[in-house]
Image (cartoon, rainbow, N blue to C red):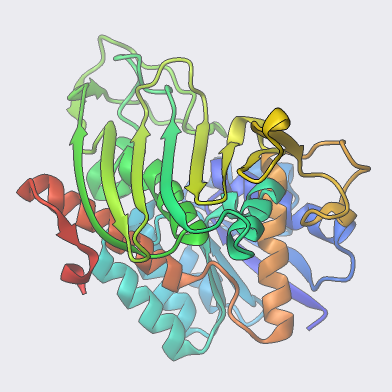
Length: 391
């Protein structure tokens, strides 16, 4: 196919990021199948029309069922809140549409498995939105691990730290309500670190964790059609209050199937950390360190360096040897957050053209959900939980 007509459901934070990726792809990757921004969908007609005009979509639709059933839509992009993922994805699969779905894949493991089964039964391509895999520095990290240049892997330590809800007057947005979001920092931020660990180190074997909700109640938010990111609202401390039903922070330890040890932390209560998504991997021959706030850099250490120059080196992953470099700018001219989404869509369009499943797909979404739920179970039962217990 020379083009793929996209229908996108959701138009705020992720909707903006996805729209930018669809628009950028043909300019920087002209040989890849072209995505056409056909229809954008949301519940608020006023906000939706504003997004349609701003982001560059052809049409707007307030009923996702109508969008999914259209014959002229090839791919359904789901970036609505988590509680909508399952129903939309299953309907899209039954209609024979390819599916891109933001993470976490569903509210729970059972729902994510249903989504995977429906996609496989429908014979469609399916992808889950773990965009951080697609930073060139992370691709370099994967290359070093896969090629054995770090040796046997001993440790993975990862953390995703934010601070956008430290203020007690921050309103009770949907991300703080379990029935809509599924979980808090654990599923929103921790899911990215879990996927990164699986991508780089391998499958999890068992976990044990703890979590806390520091602020139990927050002001209810007023309805608004403004295009906000969901991470920058201001609340009225005197407004009626509602209960926060998700975690503010979750930490857990892990053993991987290959014997490596892991520690993972996700919190929205780390003042000064806007988006500190970091990991470090230690192996028998060296170590690597990554921090998303310095997205173009990978710190690398090899034990076989000469004694007088041993230490971490800073690699700027923008040279010809690095992933996606030929599409962007001259070496040293850095790229940013939005480019990870463009690379993600590049993988999806390429997979469709090559008639294969893109990576990461719903299988990865299910595996991530299994780890998330194993951690929840370990917290509830105060014990180590094997991932196999959830199968």
